[in-house]
Length: 314
Image 1 (cartoon, rainbow, N blue to C red):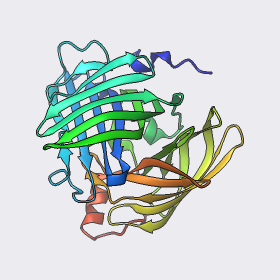
Image 2 (image 1 turned 90 degrees about the vertical axis):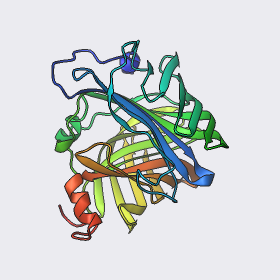
Image 3 (image 1 turned 180 degrees about the vertical axis):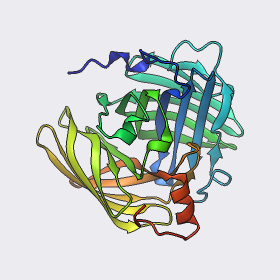
Image 4 (image 1 turned 45 degrees about the horizontal axis):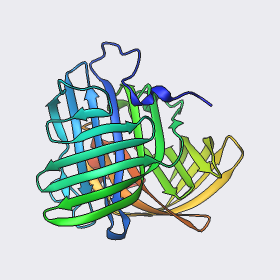
């Protein structure tokens, strides 16, 4: 098995590219309330910048100005006392502390009426994403995903929520230039003892996988093929999909996903993402996850203006 023990540290071999990126991301959800979100931050060390923060939404608000919480802070200076990628506190109060390498992290936040007191624990191994896709490769030199569980409390304007959800984390490093990325979907699902993840590229009803994994029966293996079919479209992305994948161990899977309307996320500037909570049925077992339907910002603008339809060729 590949040694990925370096994954929680700043990447080796950093060059002087101003777009060198060191990213951290955790998902967060309360499925029974259709609340979904993320905690993401990324360092641009050659620019001296730290971007990101928590974002939270439900079907009552699908934009940054009317969702439950949006504190995606651009142009924060890189904190002076950053001891590590998972050991930092940002200006917007978000902090992350590594409790156990590759396995356990503490996340805290208190700003604008939202307090987070959360702990993420791994429930499965890490997987290194290797796609061979030039556009995807331009967004990271190294990229891992890992299934886990997020627990703790969230207080929003006096209302307290208990958090106990399946959660994916990822971390990556390398130059990140979004303008090279085309259309596709990044999606995953997790249940007790099983999980999957995939990236499928294409703007039409059918898209082919370029990478991901299946984790089942204690074994994780990379995908060797996969196909996602959109069964129903929503306003800005798929509403129902069928996913079929096959891994290096010869195992096949088929899952159907029902996708919430989600958030129109514009934090990546060159790309727009319809980011949604997903309930999956994989062999009769309910898995929870998300779908990140990404496209170049100009294409999304034309879809939003009704100039082209979802699924039309670029």
